[in-house]
Image (cartoon, rainbow, N blue to C red; front, side, top):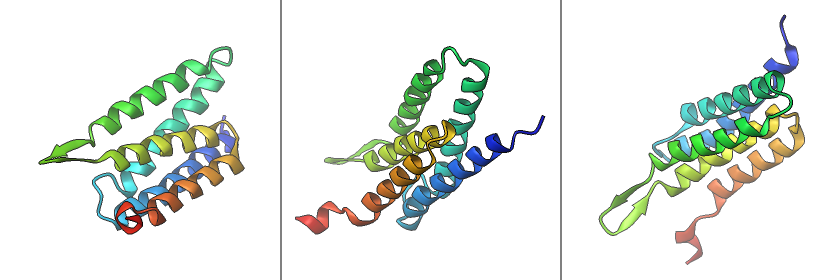
Length: 131
C-alpha cells in the first residue's frame, strides 16, 4: 500500500537536509549537499518505519539515530597541526538528523524552523568576523 504521508515526510526531510547541506557545499566543506540529504533521508526513514513497526517503543530507534549520527560526525573531525577541524560539519550532520527526525514524526513547522535556524547559524555566525 502506497503511503503518501510517508513519502511526503521523507521528501520534506530531504529538502531541509539539502538546505543545510547547500551551505556546507557552498563553503567547500567535506560533508556537503549530498551527505546532508542522505543523512536526512536515512534518519527520516528509520524514524517513520520504527514508529509504524514498533509503536510501543519508538524511542529505541531515536536513541540509535542519535548515536549513529554522532559516530558518523566523529569521522569528520580531525586534528590539523595545532587546531581541530570538522566540528561544525559534525554538528551540522547531527542537527540535520534532528530536523529529519522532527519531520518524520510530523512536526513540520518545528522541523522547518530548526532547519532555518541551522542554516542561519552556518551562514551568518562566523567567529573570525566576531573577533
